[in-house]
Length: 280
Image: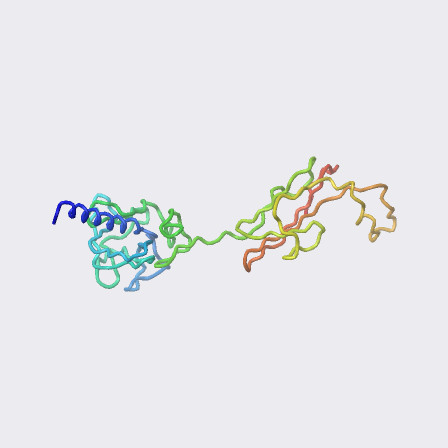
């Protein structure tokens, strides 16, 4: 074989090996398992999960995994394959089994130990998670498979890691109350959602105005009287002398898929001569 062919062969092997490394991740780790999942013996053992993000299966034969950086070849994988875009669960139980369900020769201290996936050369760290104290029956894993690390309240052994969605809520930029000057009110949702609102006191729904940008809150005193002209409460009622102070009432909901928030209502008065809080 010519020198050129040898060089090309070595380069191809390097590229293939590097590609395999790049698609393997230590994806999720549980160091204190009391109720989450049992191993093949019915024991609540520690465990970790590998994820293959690539389009090709990866054979782990010859790879190592360790929780002790000073001993990178602590436990060696047998002839086992991680399919493309799939997961492999390994029990960190100290049972040391390489047939059937995989069990390492070590367990993971709840106080925190790293998990390092080591290449067949016994030196190269393919991926790792740092030594982290993990709460009981929680995991430390990648928030999107192969992504950044975070604590996961809902463990997902052998499945895609999922962070529970934040509750769908509406957030107003200004609390209800009395303000000296006009302002622009913004409304946001805690998740991607469509916001509907009303300014006439009616109940908002999908047929109401869609929120697309700031709502200007101004002094409405110059607008014609309406409700103040209705006499339903007192026999001594008299017609208002001129325009009365008026409030702006914003009612809003957010809808995301089949989920709808409760109605949020805020009342605003501009240039009011009031010193007591407003409840709305």
